[in-house]
Image 1 (cartoon, helix red, strand yellow):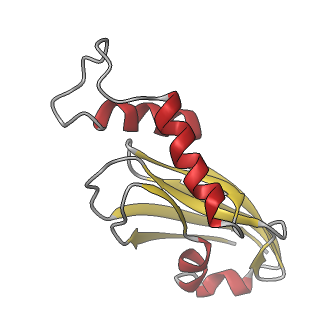
Image 2 (cartoon, helix red, strand yellow):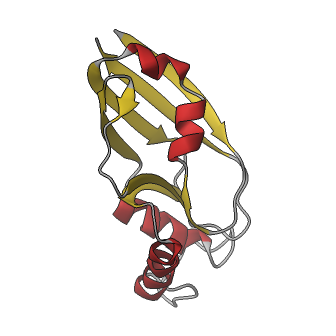
Length: 139
């Protein structure tokens, strides 16, 4: 079985946001998969996806702080600056974290670890809604 769906995510402020429940709510087809994979891809170059701890919100705050320190704004060597001081760093952060995650499916549910969740990593200060493509494969 193959199934594919685009999901429009709400606009969020810059930072790391849990979207696991939002994705599951938009995928009733997930319940039909006993064994399979979900590939989740974001159709943007200044936001990314990752999987990490979903329990303590300070983890998401620390991610934001670390990436802002690791990839600072307003560097003299940036040439791509027409869309604002947060744009080039957003592209770099998205390249580091990546545009997709793959999650195993078992018995109609994402088979994530006890403390794992899917993050939308929003790297722009004033981002609009984001679109992800979810592809389910399984039986």
